[in-house]
Image (cartoon, rainbow, N blue to C red; front, top):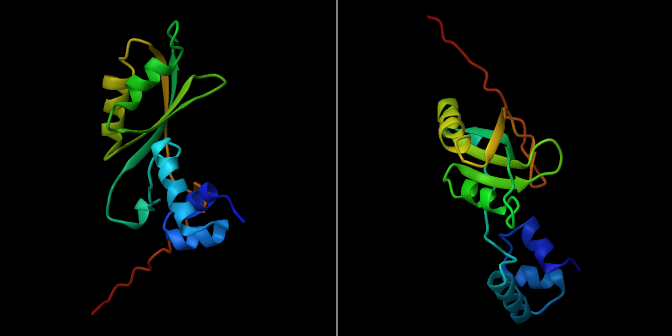
Length: 159
């Protein structure tokens, strides 16, 4: 009997009946538990993980190491909040080690990402340094493996 939250994290497309059966719960209890998790902000949303490399969409994803000056009474929270307000920002994490925050962003081009870093992120008052790393290829995300893309063989017809 798996815990309901783990079942949802593994596959949010399962029906309430399927979740109830796998969790050993009634459907009514399952619906009530999910509603409670949403109300308590334990469940924040549901997302599909897309392999954008298999589509026509062009995108660039970057991981940015950010050094900041923490604020008295707020620590890193106020700075992180300012950063995650930007539409380009997908994720922000407080880190231990040589830098303070990890920021994951997406843009249409390298120039768009570079512009975000140079004009928006690095100009924030409490940001003291950044290091940008571009994600070249995803192999695994949220426990899902991205299958290798089969190379299409080019064929030429000569007349």
